[in-house]
Structure formats: C-alpha cells, structure tokens
Image 1 (spheres, rainbow, N blue to C red):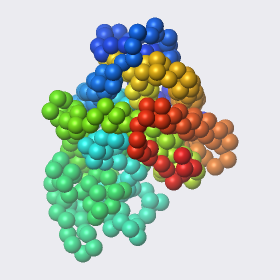
Image 2: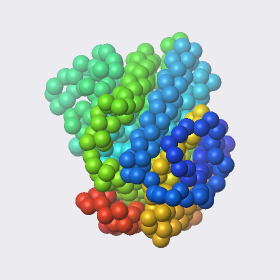
Image 3: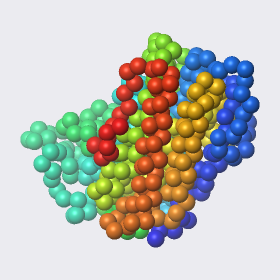
Image 4: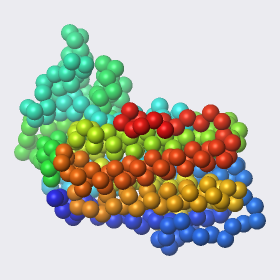
Amino acid sequence: MKSAAARTGCMALALAALLGGCQSARVTDQPAPATRNATVTAPESAPSTAAIISTYVAIAQASYGDALVTGRQLETAVNKLLAQPSPDTLDAARSAWRAARIPYMQTEVFRFGNPVVDEWVPRVNSWPMAEGLIDYVAPSYGTESEDNNFYAANVIANPVIDDGGMSVDAGNLTPQFLAETLHNIGGVDANVATGYHAIEFLLWGQDLHGTGPGAGERPYTDYDPARCTHRNCDRRRAYLESATHLLVSDLEEMVQSWQNGGRAYEALMTKDDNGGLATLLTGMGSLAYGELAGTGLGLALSKHDPELEQDCFSDNTLWSHFYDARGIRNLWQGRYIRTNGAVVSGASLELLLRINAPAVHAEMNAKVETTDLAMEALINQSSTYDMLIAAGNTEGEALINKAVQALMEETHSIEKIISALGLPNVSIQGSDSLPAQ
C-alpha cells in the first residue's frame, strides 16, 4: 500500500473546505467554521435568479483567479528547477503542480453549459495522452499506433517529425509551436502537447508500476545539462519552459474571459434568468454524472486500466476528483474558499430551494453530504487510484463504486431541481461507462 505521506502537504487543504451556506455576495478574510450544510436562518424572501448568477460569476472569477495564481507559482518553481536542477527543486516543482490542481479542478463545473469554457478546456486539461509524442517512453509503450502517426514521435529527441511522409519542423519548441502545431497534431485528441498533463508527464515521467504502489520516477538529471540523462536535456528544458508559460497564458485568457466584457461573462449575460440557472445546473449535473462518475472514476475501474486515470503520472488522481466534487458543492451552496483562505459567498441555489422547494432541497443536501463522505473516504485511505482499480481489489472497487453511486444519485436530485424550477431543455452529459440517466 502506498503511504499517505507520499502526498504533499498542500493536499491537507482538502478537508479545510467543508462549508455552510451564506446569504449575500461578499468576500471575507477567514473561512467559516468547518461544518457541512450548516443551518442558516432563512431570509424573508428567496434570492433572485440574478443574485444567484452573480454569485456564480463571482465564484468563477475567484476560482479561475486562484488557478492563475497557482499556475504562476508552478511556473516559478519550474524556472527554479531549470536554473538549478536538483532533487529538491524537482520535488518543489511537483508540489507546485499538485497545488495548482486544487483550484483548477474546482473550475471544471463551469465547463458544461458554457461553450467558451468547453472549447478552451482541451488546451489545459486533456487526458488521456499519448506521452510518446513528447518524450522517451519505456519499450512496453510500443512504437506505433494504427490510429496515430505521432504515437511515439518523441518530439524532444527529434527536431523533425514525420506525418505519413510529410515532415514537420520541430526545431524550436516554442509555446506557439506546442499550441498551434503539436497539440492534437494529426487531428488525434490523444496527442496532448499542452496543459497540466503534459507538464505532469515532464515532471514525473511514465508511471511504470501498473496497479502497484509508485508513481513516475523521472530523475532531476533529465534537466541537468552537466549530467544529462536520457539525452536531449536542452530540448526537454525548452519544452517544459514553454509548456508552463503557455499554461499561465491560457489561464490568463480564462480569467479575462470571466471579467465584465469577457467572452464567457458576456455569453452568460445574454441568457435570460432560466438560461442562467440552466447553465449552472448543466455544469453541476454533467460534471457529477458523465465526467466524474463516468469518465473520471468509473471508466478506468471498469477496465482495470491505470492508463485511463486522469493524473496517471503523479498518482494525484483521487485529489483531482475530490476537488471536482467540491466544485459542484461550491455552486450548490454559493460559497468558495480561496487558496488564501478568503471566502467568496452569496445568494445560492441552496437558499432558493430551501425556501421554495424544501423537500427537493432536503434531498439534494443529503445527496451532497453523501458524496462528500464518499469522496473523503477515497482520499483518507492509503492507496492511490491506480491501486484501487486493480483486478481483484474488492475493497478498492467498493470504495470507488460508492462514490460513483453517490454522484449518480446526486445527479438525480439535480434533475429534480431542474424540474422544480421549470427549466426546459437542460441536457446533462452522459457516459458510455454508466447506465443512461
């Protein structure tokens, strides 16, 4: 079993995010006491839809803002690694990557229903990936794929790569080249060249432990020009520097997009009240059901395949899924705890339902609580996700299935909210690995 101590201290923030409801939009310096679904004295009237959407926007602005701050901290840590490669600077860069996942994963709930966000996300969080496109891989990875000419192109080792007889100049591994030429090259989604997971692979390397304990073990000397391992350290350094710079640039774009006048903000503001609430609930339901219960937790379990887990190089997967679920609760309760401890809170869907549909409210609150407990059970045990999905690990399968079931039931409650609010044409994303809703 993998020691829980292998996870960095930044993840201790997870359980500090337990929260209660609030009534008006504001930012406070300290988080509220760590209680779930805290009882709040109801006001005389339910919050307006406009006020709920205002909170939705405020949480988007804060969470993407935190993703940008931690993205810049990751870039700083990477620059220190490149300036002075050592075990310590590599560990610091890895810790910064894990910390950057905390706020980013809480933004995933804004994807579905917001086309501006959904078209942007593949640049920053695409997975699974054909890592052989980027750098060296173990022989077990293979050398070719029937559907992907670039499956093992290894652009770091090869300044010219071949596309079925056509040469692609990869001499300069600039942010522009990564974003405009290499990412999804050949029209293949698995050719992930940018974002968190490209950086993750460059910091950890392949996890060759299968469903056993252990993550990627890339040596710091892969970035040390004086003691270079696995060759091409200069190009590997250039790739990592460009990828982290590009991630920050992409996050800056999304932060701007949620400001007054930005693309995501203005697209939301063109919708009427029902459209705004439909967007909010589409995000909650689609993340809970199709994305998290299905693609995130259920798919790799059904195939017992660690290659299908999200943070497969770092073994950070359970934490990423934990914060996905936290993002859903943030929108339900209208409350987000920033990375600096400040709290953004306001008029909430939870408050609206508590006043106007108390039975539906009580059911949803109970389902959110059940999901919280199931996700906490996953992060509080000592095995990583790839170990839990191993064939024959009945305890691991039970823990994951409990979380999947909780998320599915939470989605059923979200559908009841949609019905109670009379919202037409709300489509929740499904998953081939789950039964139809």
